Image (tube, rainbow, N blue to C red):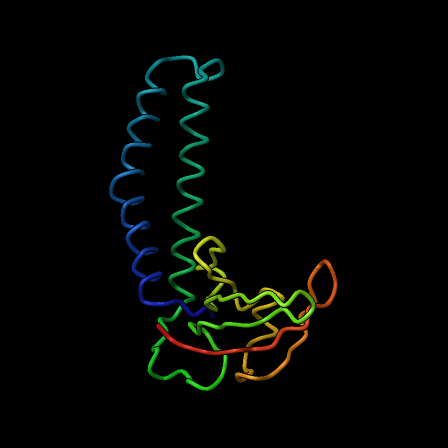
Length: 155
C-alpha cells in the first residue's frame, strides 16, 4: 500500500487518462498503418510501432497498479508534532553544519529538485516519527549522517 497526496493522485490519474484516450489510439493507428505497408519482417516502421505499443501498454499497466494500490492521504489525520508523510522538515547536518529543508513524500512523488525526498530513502526513513530537536543518524552510501531536526511544518 502506497500513500499519495491528492495532487499526485490526480496527476497520475490524468496521465493514465491521457495515455488511454489519446496516446494508445494513436499508437494503434500507427501500428495498423505500418502493418498495411506489407512485409513485416523487413518493416522498421512496424517494429518501432510495436515497441511503442509495448512501452505504452507497460506504462498504462504500471499507472493502473499504482492507483489500485494507493490511498490518498488525509493531511488532517497526520500528527503535527512528528515527522510523517507530507511533513516539511528542516534539519542540520551536524558534521558540515549545513541546513536543509525537504518534504517527506511517497516514492512516487520524490523529486529532489523540488525539495521532496522519499520516506523510503535513507534520510527520509531516519527522520520518520521523530520530533523537532531530536538528533538522528541516517545510513547513506557515503557513511553515517548525524542530523538534528530543527523544525517540522505542513504546507
